Length: 112
Length: 115
Image (cartoon, rainbow over the protein chains, first blue to last red):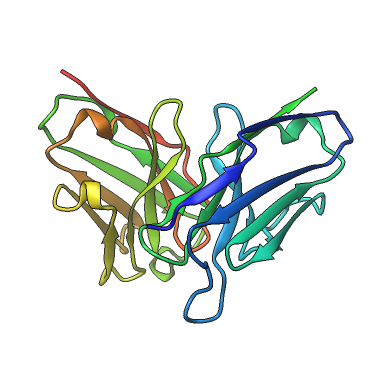
């Protein structure tokens, strides 16, 4: 199984600040078809997960350009700029390249 | 507007069965693979099963193989998860999600396995 390792486990940021979350996979996430199926999600308190980024760097419909994804192979990063109060929650990376699909253990973002 | 609405959860004894449903609307259900993802209390996300757009292919995590069955009725735009021989470790909120990128998720349904 592909193990997804997310760091940090939690972080606190001031409003207007910037954060980076790292996600590393135990195997390359490049699919045989050439695509890399790495997604980022946010789970706000008491809500379902919501897709932010898919295929490493593509923002989902309606997602602010304050969110950006980057990386390749086994090393990926989510950056959030100009942090707003609504950004608090737990962020997960997830891979869809290989079954079983797996997720990182989450990064809890708190606002100072 | 895409909507996924789960139902069928509740309290069930170990070893018993339960069937979850997910009613989809706002998109052409028969064009998309679908999946179930669960989240144990205070834990992270765990993929359970995926079914292809036409139901011809299914995939399961090892811990539920032989006990859970994912299925779909495209005429009713509904996804199902039949869960047999339930265990305490199956206790979780179960989400239905549109497969691939997991771009849409339902509100989730709680399943508690306890005597």
